[in-house]
Length: 594
Image 1 (cartoon, rainbow, N blue to C red):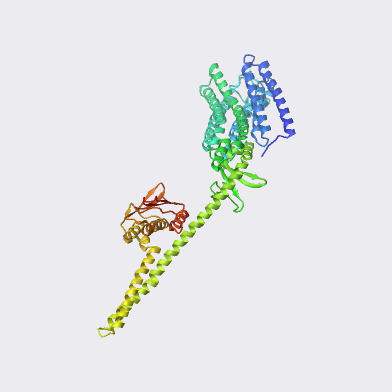
Image 2: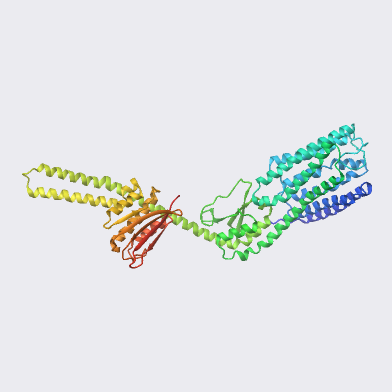
């Protein structure tokens, strides 16, 4: 969003600036010429305060026409200047501007709490501001109704004036109203304002807190000093010494004037940030995806920044690694800015919601990073496809393992049981023939029963080779020990952990089984070792021998190639170390949960 002021706004801003200068000069002359000849410095300081608010408000309004902070600041400026006309000797001017004299404080609180958007964001803040405005109007109005113009008002150091709204009253009633206003307006409301400031800071994100802190701190200083001054007056019944009043005045002016200055600094910071964004084009040339995020995060001043890339084929947003990502919705702390390339969705920036108040900065950063983001989107698309391939491989391996389990169960419960039953029947038939049976027939039955027994044993070994039952029943350690016991050479098993995820145990078993089969067939080794242990979130299983070496996972006809595919399918890797004459080490690194 690129906001530009219209011609009408520029003209209106010029007229407001001229009116403010004239209004301020008249306010100064009212004080100095009519009454306060000994304090022209303080009079001019009050006028300069109003002009500072006016300048900051006009700049903010022209920079961001849709933002309400500018009009609020302009309103504070004119109310601060109008407040000085309370010193006029004209009864009408005195009455009018005395009635409006406390509104600058209410609008000041409104401005501080509404920063940076110009809108109050919560019901509590809206209720507080309504009450502040009501109190700022109600008490001066009540005082004007009861002020007979025969004595000085405690909080306004000037000669008595006539109120055109006077109905009936006396000095005691006016004092009660002033003291009550001090407790309610400068006590309770000021305290509530400070609490709201602290609440706003506590609820803000780190980036928003950095933006809010100067303004909110200034607002807290103003509220606190005003509350201190009026507490002294209310509870002592007298004005404090002049030097105390002077100190409180200047500190209060410092707090008030910090607000427009802080706003101007914020505007300047945003402008300078947009200038530095231009360097992103060079910084992000050929940059990897993680560097793009870091550079944008630094340029925008938002360490929580995330980037999601649009994949048109999948119709979803993914992160730099190709994983699907959900965009935030309905949250006050996070916002989404969409970026396009040639009219097509490219990516989104998920960032702190305070950046919505600096749309030009976000737009400039997105434009500078657009080419790098297009490259990163292609990278994310490749990563997403790779993730799908890996998931597909894992599903195929899992399906193969399930088929092995089913085949092992079928062999055990089907053919193997039938062959055993047939062998038992032949043995019973052999016993029933008796001693007078034909020797040739008896020998045939006996040999057939023996062959059946051999077939059963071979079938058991076949079923065990597919997936040994002991693996599911007793775990990886027992299965590896059984594998070692069946080997034709001495094999030791070391340090196998307790039960693991079934899929992990199956893969680890096949690593050991295939590696040990290669030892038996090709290594001409005298001994071997199987070891397993956890290391940095992985299960490391190793099979080592003292054979001739020279094995390779990429060799023709090598079962290690298929084993490597299986290991990689679950996100692991297979390492083969086999120098000629130096034995072989097959190491499988399998990711596992802690």
